[in-house]
Image (cartoon, rainbow, N blue to C red; front, side, top):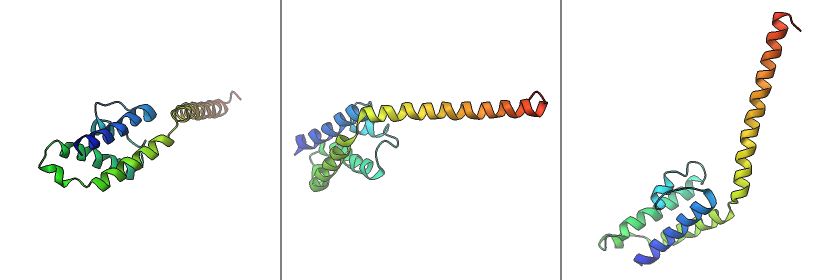
Length: 122
């Protein structure tokens, strides 16, 4: 039981690194850096998985772990992370930056034209 919880957490942690490019030494560290990359419910499930890893370190606390919930959390996190496409995420980031630059250019151009009309040059 001790190894399986660690293996599950390691699976989720490896997929978070591969699919979301999140760095960290373990699942708990990676969860602190997820931000809005994962839905709140899945972050809660992954946090339970990370907590189960910590509880499994102590044999007395091992009884407190709900293995059914750990397995559901593992399955849900893996399902979500396998659907994430890293190339699509990068494309979205680039398009977001380009949209921001285009909007800034539009606002600055409009302001320049307004000032030129106001000053009487146009």
